[in-house]
Length: 83
Image (cartoon, rainbow, N blue to C red; front, side, top):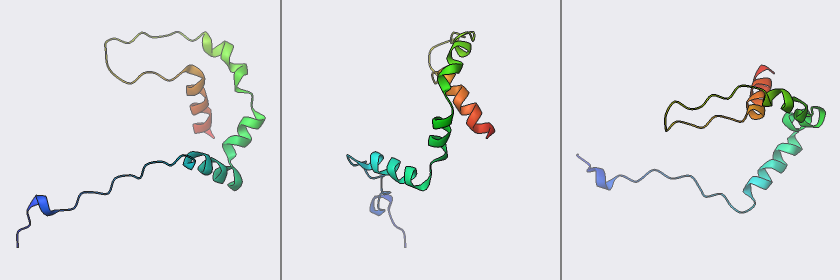
C-alpha cells in the first residue's frame, strides 16, 4: 500500500521554553554540585585579561562566517577542555 507524503505526521518540534525554565535548570545543576561553579569560586578569570588583551587581532578576510570568540571566553574553553 502506497502512502502519500502528505499523510505523514510532521516531526514534533522542540517545546518552547517557559518563563522560569532556565532558572529552574540552573538551580537543579547547582543542587547536584556544579563543578563549573566551584571552579569559578576558586579561580579569578579577570587576572588573565591584561595578557589576553595583548593578543594580536586578525581581521576577517571577507564577509560571512562565524564571529570569533572573545579571547577570555576562548581561554576559559581551553582550560575547561584540558580538565
